[in-house]
Amino acid sequence: MNLGMNWWLLWATSTVLRKKTNPWALWSSAALGAVCAFVWLLSPLTLMREVVLKGAVAGTMAGLCFRPKSWLNLLKYTALLLALSAFSAGITYALALSGTTAGEAFPSVGWYLIASGPLLLSLPLKRMWSSLAVCFSAVEVARRFRFRLGGATIELTAVLDTGNTLLEPFTFRPVVVVDTSAVVEHLPPELRQAIVHWQAGDGGKLCALPDSIIGRVTLIPYTTVAASGLMFAVRPELCEVESKGAWQAIEAVVAFAVGEVRLCGRSALLPHALWPLS
Image (cartoon, rainbow, N blue to C red; front, top):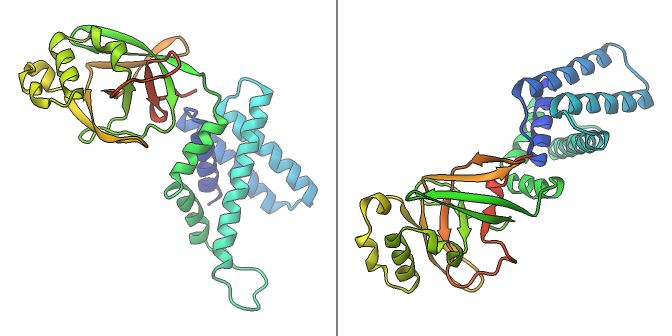
């Protein structure tokens, strides 16, 4: 049980930090914590020594699992791991208290209560993990983004948009919203005319698109404070985002923003799901 809880805590830490973790490193770190917990059962320690040793073991687990590049990062990863451990323990204890009877001093904590804590934190509170990830992940202000369509490669500067949760209805791919005026001149002429007519309220021109393009066209439902409707979008032949000097392929749909877009010199909105991992 301790091995499973350690694995979940390390997984939750990696989710919050948005760090790719080697599965073997994850299991090895969890096993190290389980072995230490077993040794402590055989030779009980004083409270102070137990706190110090648990902190040291947590730091060793974080270092083995995440391979931080500095002592400051190691302290941050360890603090987050311990905080999630305390939070999970609090949820478990609250569940145990809900089932106590009058006069019972300490509730009994069964395995099902221990297992239900991580489940409650993993499934309904998935949005919370995403919010925490934004707080703990140091990300750059902008990234280079490019897509290829009809033989032309269009490169843009994208900014992170945590409010962009749009998905393509059929493939469920995340949607990158681009400034239409920044890309329209680089698109195939037929597609360019279709976008202009669609945004002008005339969708009849879509039927005139060649088969090579019409098969990539899709419509994205959107709702904002000011308006709602359908954005004209395409499934590009290739989408890439720059990460650490190299281009990383991503699965995405490119939608063309309706109306004038002001992005402070940027020309695309990249959703959090597509922002490069550290």
